[in-house]
Image 1: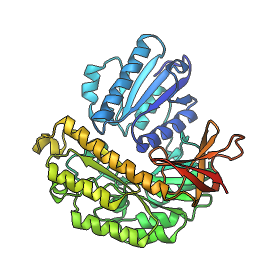
Image 2: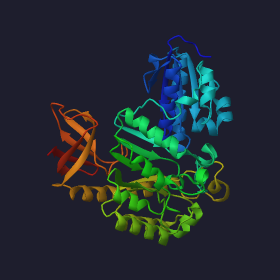
Image 3: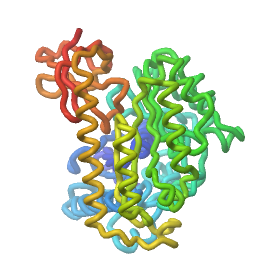
Image 4: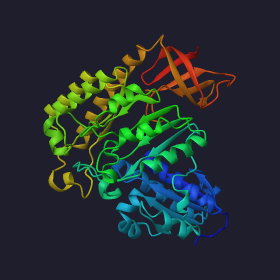
Length: 435
């Protein structure tokens, strides 16, 4: 049991939005147990620090390790009393971490919430399922619809860390959406390792469309945004659901990873070039004004110069509205690490990464320039200096474009929608005036 010297716990969250949701759930449970909980605060403000780590790729693991050592040093300097590590890195490398960094009081895995609470002197309450304390602005929230993943992508360690897919029930998710709406949430951002497969483990078939039918009926929810839809086995009726329901944003995050048949086969993606192109065409024809965000992976074993050129041509042809890219890193225990040689030099991976991002930068500027003069609905998130900063339905928080509106007197409230006329554009920002 921890010292109650300050009775304050500081949770440091690293990694993706799925980790953020886990931290928010932990905060709620800790609050009910009588703790005051801070999030990403200065070390001296709390007696206990919990680091929720990421272990997805090399850079994320390095960030997690650096953060752990930062707080180990804070503990040695008597700035904090206790240090705990949870999350993906801890789940995957618990034994090694215990040996290499014994200064941490205790390590916990990704499914150890009751154990963490017991260690801290609290108690896990099952009746709080679905409840959490938001760390995002109060008008939007991430909603994790499932945990784990059943896919067999050769490069990905997530199934090794998070296990097989485990969907939340339709009833629980509907109740969670109502709870979030009661907190003032207007935008739900659905997340999962594999949104496409939601429900298959519980109901024997895909239930994403059915889930959306339930969620669009929740009072107070104005936007529903879809993240991480796997392209293979794309659900029937989903594009029509997006088209026919104004509450569902004309936005789809669907990571294609690559377009070369050779690389896709080595990646074990379960889809080929022709099927990807057919799917993109189907999505755009059904929802002509949709914004597609995709993620690509460069430097995977098998990606020679011809395959990379094919990927570049794919980007130039498709002109994705939003795009992110990762450099392949060999992850222990994955199929690729066991059976493929990581033969592409780091320098080449970096060059390919920069090449892709430069192309996307130009495409984004051209797309933004085309929006100048248009009137677009914008959700205000925050202020920066004299500007109210918001997003269109084509933009997810943190990762996508923003709209800046001059607002010296701060008359526009965060969490409210406004019609904005776009007056200027940059590569990743729009500027406008309230109509």
